[in-house]
Image (cartoon, rainbow, N blue to C red; front, top):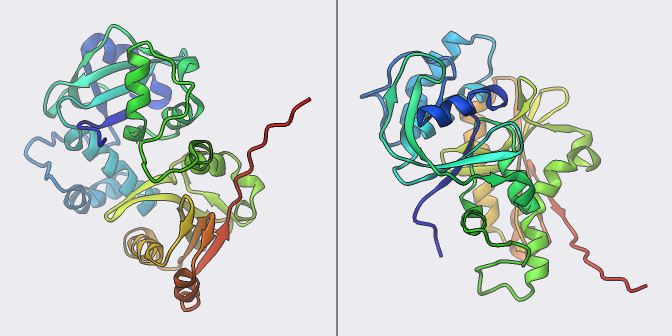
Length: 310
């Protein structure tokens, strides 16, 4: 079942330093160095917003990259316009608990920290980090101010209702083995957590800005990029697309769209763009397509789950 509302993890300020202030004031907000009131300047399409405000961000922050500018403007638009009334917000308080609330207003501008705001109806009950299953804990603890965690909607609602979440949950009727499905579902989190130990991690780093990893689920105008990485010599941007199970040639067109976005919107004039597809297996159509796509590589992963008796 597709959620009727979205769920976001939002950190109010560095290390969530304004969390208590947001709770007491009944709002959530952001900054990103753009000080003007955005009322009347918030188009529905975030791409249009980015085209207008990326130059403003770069002008205010000349030392920042195009990636940083695109990321900042995208998160600002999400808080100011993208979130809808009724969407659920999780905000860490820095002490192992997440405040939970619902968006209760349109955008408004206020003086003080985090000037770009939305009113929030905070709930009495929060969620302890210790209660969260690992997949949600990883998503809710990801680096960056705004993170869309809607894929964990069912788990979040169960936690809010006081239910346990130990059992394996899936809603895909095509899944034959829910255990393998659960292991594959965490592929992205596992890859990110163990990046330096992989063959890709020897040559590339997941993209970071100011020491914060921002390359996971990087927003593009054709959908989120699973992982955006950069070579250690800063000369190549790498788009990584993860697929559970067998991958077909359809994924080639998908990753090429992401690569095109990175090339035209993010890459500096002296940077190349390459792609990597990671899947359990490939079919003949994918093999044929990759044979004429020299800037895209394919890697297989292996799921191994064993129970060993004593």
